[in-house]
Length: 468
Image 1 (tube, rainbow, N blue to C red):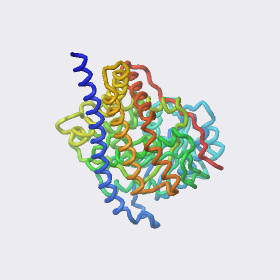
Image 2 (cartoon, one colour; image 1 turned 90 degrees about the horizontal axis):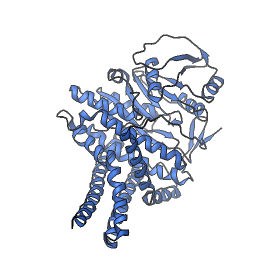
Image 3 (cartoon, one colour; image 1 turned 90 degrees about the vertical axis):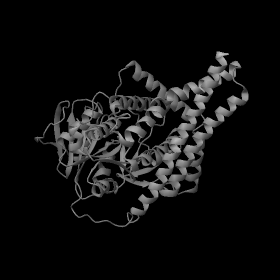
Image 4 (cartoon, rainbow, N blue to C red; image 1 turned 120 degrees about the vertical axis):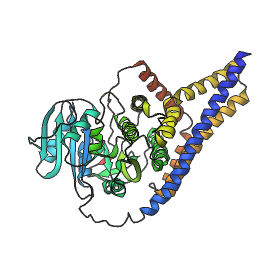
């Protein structure tokens, strides 16, 4: 009798989890759609030529690089051609073991240039600072290896300007991205951070640092990741932003107020998810101190980055992401349901904890339990089929809604065959790919629980989207 009760409760728990997850994301979808419509109306003149007054906030672009010889030159060339009034580029070579520093020295004619700076954040030893005689706004820092957080802290110490923007070394920014990302800081003086949209560059064509043609990858894993990114940014970030409850700004592209970040201690070295942890800590610090602030998301500044195209690299990436999420939430657990927590402490944090932090346990064991119950005869075929179809159908609903939100707003992929392939990707990613991601998240959660040592990790770059 107790076995039947346990099985029944487990079935309902799995179903309620799926319904709760879907309902939560659909509400975010509605909020995102409303906010996106207003945002597009406010930014309707963005396509016209823009001039600069000289009063725009100055920005330092920080590019941490570890073994990035395949893409670093193209990335720097892309950044040098950005359209903005005043910015500088600081590339931080984090003790690379390949020719990252050599290709930079050769391409830009770098020379050592000693300079004083205020080391307000502790970092590994800075070996040399290089300047580019032909590019006065480009500097390269060569330092001992310390990880991405350490590299970013070193860049913050050396930066000259009040805002800094962290960029992955394999990324390409659209020319107007800085202007669009800086706009929230002009609209609201309490803004301390702004995230932009990250899109998958696989299948696109980049030449001399410019995105020449938007395309879709032939690799099925990369195609599925495009759908994932649409979900994550178009209603994951955009849904939480209007209520000042966004907990994640991608490490690939985010703009921050430097003094505020230094005031909370900069990036932490003891977490593998330094980007998310910083954002959650900023929320916690500002909320608990009762200070006015805003952390926002701007969907139209776009950063293009390379996505993994093999299972091993993708698996390692998702395990790291899950560990980073676990660390970020646990290190700032005081924010959860704190009397001063506001929407972020009472809505976003519990949602993230239940559906993203602990969700993989319920999801993976739910699939496994239902399947095992069917095989052993404890669960009927009809119940098993209903639960399985419910899980897949609700997943398809979320993916397709993100796809339609993209098509109604930015319509980045203009060709009909692109639209069809994306729609098919939004459907078929739910047949195995999403379940595999849940398994990888569970592995990441387990490794965090047992305290297994984590590392920044390396990603295999194909650089197939670059052309000379």
